[in-house]
Length: 266
Image (tube, rainbow, N blue to C red):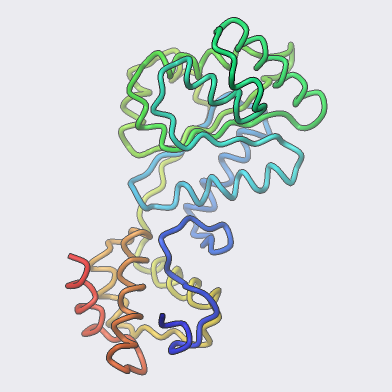
């Protein structure tokens, strides 16, 4: 453990999505704003895509926390590779443990409509976040997602949905015209620029109690050469660099230490 050595209060570069360590880069802020706009304006479906490790799940957690604070009923499905009925049961189960045991589709949809209508009447309404949506292979499951939008009152959807996934999700949605036409907002997160990656590293260190940058300019350039701005890869190499730096009893992390860390990772 290198926390004491670098005088940190917590691990700055863990690859676990954390709303507490959310770095508001311009594109992540735009993704957040677009998704919140879609829900606030009562749009049916919004979609956020990007490569693995670009921060999609972290954005979705910020969205969930903010909407929950505003009175929405927010539920997240994290393993949506399900057949249509199993998917509906998963949604129902997330809202009511008893409803998840219903196996008759007609009865299940009736119960879901009742639950969603109650959520709309008693609060701001329900929001379903489907994370890792690119793993859905059955087109019929996507059709059930679209059909959930038919559960509505005269002036509003009973449920708003946010689809989160890697780039193949865009291709799958493009092949499903009825669902594609219901996507009101779509944003694609890209990797960080060099400047934003520098700010990301400094933000993470400061949020973890550091009083200094720790990484030299050349070290950061080496990190970028390896990570190409991917937050996931940046976290991995920075975390390993702090460990290597401690073992070498270094006062700062320089490019030599980063290169050694990269060799450990590849």
